[in-house]
Length: 280
Image (cartoon, rainbow, N blue to C red; front, side, top):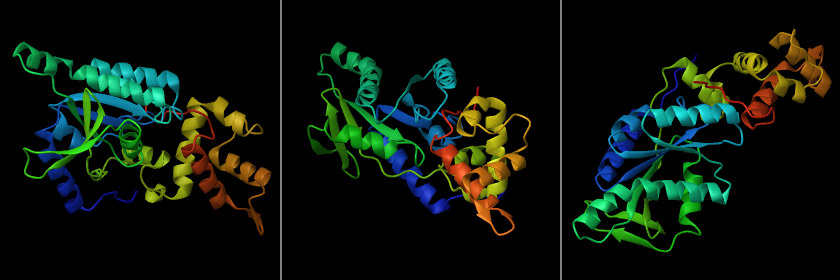
């Protein structure tokens, strides 16, 4: 497998920016892909922010197995975190995230009240790897919900805060890159859902991994998409049959490379149904 990594300088810069902003942040909103919750966690950012109050949000739930998502929610709650699952395209799900953040900040404001001080808005930072929904959530929260935008003093660089509600302000954070991926299984999971390039493995190998996992765990999904397949077919036999049925042909045989690419894209985009690649 090709070594998957990003430029260390970029990651170091991102770490420094997050660490600087943590001084004025109350709550971390960590977005994880519900199909691969642990593989989609940026471990470097997690370690940097682990001492802050945290809301874990499982995104892409419209593409994940709902039974497995429920198990993951319980897993994170048992770890001591607040946790919710969310389809970021649903306004009510976004509102629920806002409510959960406000709930996390209640203890902070109770201390203010006890001291005779006025309650302060909760300040939150959203973190997450590319393609997990970070930009979508920030845009949803800062769009129609944004009552005002202002610069807060008291920091070496003024930070842009977005007023989401009277109880909640969101820090407009920089884009965060993930660290290197030395764990082959994690890298494969990320490639299967499209969070990193699928070129980490030859398409034939990645497609076989996906096919065999789905065959073992979600055969009904496979059968629904390709009703001519049966459980006895190997991945190679299945891809040949798919190529023939769909007309992916070359002179002298089937265009198996195209079949692999199309199959992987259909898996990534949910055309084979709701699939979770990482289980408790």
